[in-house]
Structure formats: structure tokens, C-alpha cells
Image 1 (cartoon, rainbow, N blue to C red):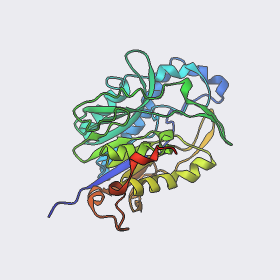
Image 2 (cartoon, rainbow, N blue to C red):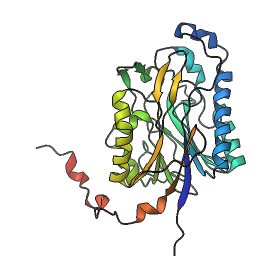
Image 3 (cartoon, rainbow, N blue to C red):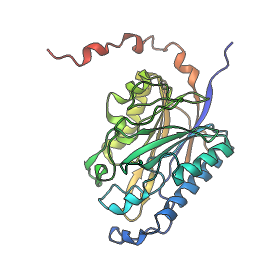
Length: 314
């Protein structure tokens, strides 16, 4: 009998951990020269969460979108450009790689990337339990707009993915925009925040072989909150995936924009129970072998899908 493939997975639900934020948006320039201090405070907070997760038996952990700082895209301020860093040897990845190796944890870490040419991206780096960087995923869709709670302008800060994520040995997919990473515990994909709303993203990851998709986000507003649970449950059931969604919780000065949290992990049969005893962690046991069992509904959507007809016009 084949052993069950059950992996204990965690996502974080936190906010900016730097305590000395200015009181108003007009005072943000006070942070000039202090962004490394701000980054370090957030990274060390997340290393502490890695330790707490490992103590609960977690094997894979995913952090929230742009976790090494506040969510700064609520306005246009070039101050934040200095927070962008290299996705392989920058301070965040260097520190997390050491912690991953020490703790034996696989880590999905969404950072603010600056590549060697100076171009900036919203990027998730995947680090294995040996501390090796397996590769990265760059956010493919960027929001710019306003809802009933506030405005946001991500294209001011970074570019949408160019598909140059790098094809290392751990990348088992063919689509350069949607890399899937083979880890010792399963195949991991990433879709960052706004990406989850587009109907080709999750099926693309599923077709490329992903079993567990991390969906880090910074999201707010009534429609986003309404869709947050619906999208992950429907996509997990429709595309035979597990999806781990992480959102911020509470508000961050000086913008004081409230984030609704509600991080969770969904599978083909619904939301998984949260096993965590830590307020900033959501932990679930993910039975990856469930993906190879017959669908209890009797459906076989991957078999019966007809991609060749969906883009045709009369």
C-alpha cells in the first residue's frame, strides 16, 4: 500500500512589524535611510513565525505579499524603490535561506525584486529545506484603481511579469509565466494577489502539474472579501488543487487601510481545518494523494475539458 502524502502547510496572516512608522503619509520621508531597518524588522518577525510553524510540525510555509514591508502601493512615492532587492542574493532571501536550512522548512517568500538591469517586480521566491533557491514567480497582473476603501497603483512600483522567471532544475513546467517547482514534498505553484481573479491562471498552473498553489495577497474591499473564499474553493474543486491564501490582517500606519485577513487553505473538498495555536499562522494538513483519487462527484473535469473550443468565435 502506498504511504499517504500528507504535508503540513502554513500561511502567515500578519502586517508590517516595523514599530516606528510615521504618523501621517506626509511624514513618510522620515523613513529615508531607515528602510533596511524596516526590512530587517519584518524579515526577523517572519523568521520567528518560521520557528513557531516548525514547532507545530509545519513542513512548507508561505508568507504574505510583499511581506518585508508595509503595503506601500496605496500612493505613489519613489521612496519605496529602495526596498527592492535581488531575488537570489538580496538580504531577505539570504536570511530566509539560512533559516530554511536551519529549520528544514520549504519557504515561499514574496519580495519586492530588483533584477540586475534595475527593473522591479513583485516576486515570490521558492526556497527549499536545504536553503537552496529553487526559482521565482513574478506577478503577472497588476491592479490600478480605487474601491470604496481606497486607491492603489501597483504599476508605479513594478512591472508585470515578462516570463523571465528562470528555468532551474526544479522547474518542471513549460509555461515560463507560470513556473511549477518540484520540491521534496510536492509540486508548488504561485499566483500573487490580483492574479487569482483571472480565469486562466489556476488552470494554467494545474495543467503545468501544480498540486499546491500559494496565493499571497494584500487585499481589501467588499467585493474582494466576498470573492476571497469563493474563488479558492471553486478553483481548488474545478482544477483539482490545494490553494493556500494569505492576506494581511488589521491596518498599517500611516495609511490605516484595514485588511480583512481570513487567510485559509482550500482543497477540492472545501476549506481545511486550521490547526494552528498561533494567531499569525494558519496551519493545515494537506493530503496531496487526495488529488489522485476519483472525484466523489463522479466528474472528471481534466479528462472532459475542451480547451480547443473556448476561444472560438462564430
